[in-house]
Each structure stands twice: as structure tokens, then as C-alpha cells.
Image: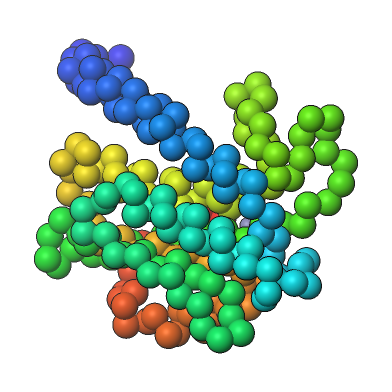
Length: 204
Ligand SMILES: [Zn+2]
């Protein structure tokens, strides 16, 4: 390794270590939110004939909304939107550091795949379990982590007083059913979204 790189690494190591500690602390502090989300059986509409009356997609969306609000991000606006006969959507905007900041569009979803069978002993779709450092339960990886990852990334920037662009986070509740409502919401929110210079897709 070049001498200059060695020096740079030495200089930045304490900061990198403290950032890693900050991230670990945030994961620990917010884990309960994630575990509670897994407990909600909000299966996507194609696999749940009662989706429009059982309120489960709404419950999951509101659970995520409350957690996002509790993070107290600077410049946050969050809207719960549910147009008639449509699945709910969470539309989040976080102001950029500068007035003319570019926009980043971050996409995720909170509806879940069907429960199915064949879970190992002690595991299940709505029983969040951490085993060997992995979190089991339906919807954790696909795609409930998206709100968690997007919001904590922005929070990390704000905690370190780093400038970040304007962020639009689009969390839909219909992805596992083919995102039937996605075009409708993208069109109706076109003006509010603006023109993104980067699109980040958290879908696994
Ligand atoms: Zn997915």
C-alpha cells in the first residue's frame, strides 16, 4: 500500500469506526419496529381475498409511517395516500441541504409474499426470529427493510452534518401483486416527485 493511502486510512479510521458503531446502535435501537412489522400478516392483494376490508395493508403502512415520524428527520414530509379501490402508499419527501438540490428517488414496498408452508421448527411467517445473525419472518428482506434502510441512510447523513440531496421515498403496497397501482400513483404524484437524477431500488 502506498504511504499516502496508509496515512489516509490512519486518519479516517477513528471516524469510520465511530460511524460503524453509530449504524450498529441504530439497528439495535430500531429493531423492535422491524420485528413488529413482521408480525403483521399484510399479504399482498393477489394472495388475500380480504385485503380491501381486513385493514392489514393499512396497518403495515401506518406502522411504518409512525416509525418514520419518530426518527425526527430534518425537512421531512410524509403522506399516507389511499385512493378509492387502490392499495395504500407512503409518500415521503426529505428536503435537500440546498435550495436547488437534485432529487433522488428511493423505491420500496411493504406488502408481503404469501405465507406458504415448510417453515423450520420454531420459525414462521409472522414470528420474527433472529437465528445465527439472520432475521427470519415474511417481509423482512422483501421488502420491509426498504423504509428502514432509506430513512436511516438519510439520518446518518444528517447526524454527521453531511449535505444530502432532496430525497423522495416511494413505498408502495402492491408490488407482490404486480404493482398494479404503481402507474396510477406515479402519474398522480408526478409534480411532487420532480425529475430524479438517481433512482435507488431497494427491491430484492
Ligand atoms: Zn418484493
